[in-house]
Image 1 (cartoon, rainbow over the protein chains, first blue to last red):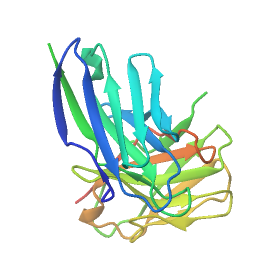
Image 2 (cartoon, rainbow over the protein chains, first blue to last red):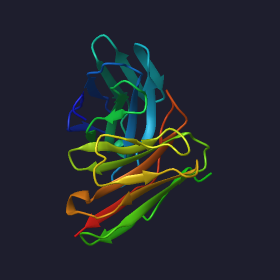
Image 3 (tube, chains in turn orange, purple):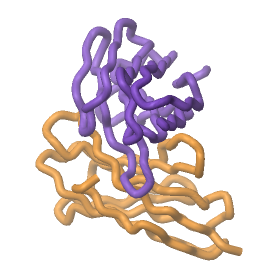
Image 4 (cartoon, helix red, strand yellow):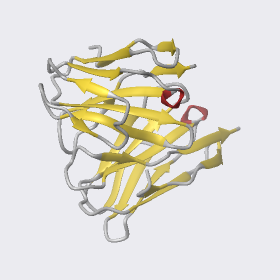
Length: 111
Length: 112
């Protein structure tokens, strides 16, 4: 998505912490989603942020700063099964239905 | 609870052939979507529907048509397939604003 930017690839070590950043530009903000997609599979929902701050959900946390157009997904205690693509998504245009996805960040967890 | 089911899972078409992809959801969701996913391009919205009998164009609608005759079904049609339509197609549904989308398992389409 041309209005959502994420790094293309990241590598991290098992047991470590990794932060995946997402920046966006929008004319009407209605929240930001993070999805996880394992290779060859469908995306699955991880988190949703509509207010500024950090939302924690087990090993995964998501942060949002609306004034900066910035979000990040924080993965703690990395496991090999966390190797996947992480997609940032938000409705960037007027009207909720037009959700734009970033191109995704492919995370590789190594031993 | 099946969630979102797409058929078929794989298909190879010759240029100029037509086909229909079927998406069915059993969660009583109002909103349904068709995306295509290509390497380096991410998920791009083709068409979407906000309720039975409604459809609207997304980001990349050319070459595709859709229909939502029943609330639980959303059909994506390719009237004359082109190699540029080789992609993985995902159907999704959700219950409205601020709700998570549920995706089907995808259809891998190759047009030769």
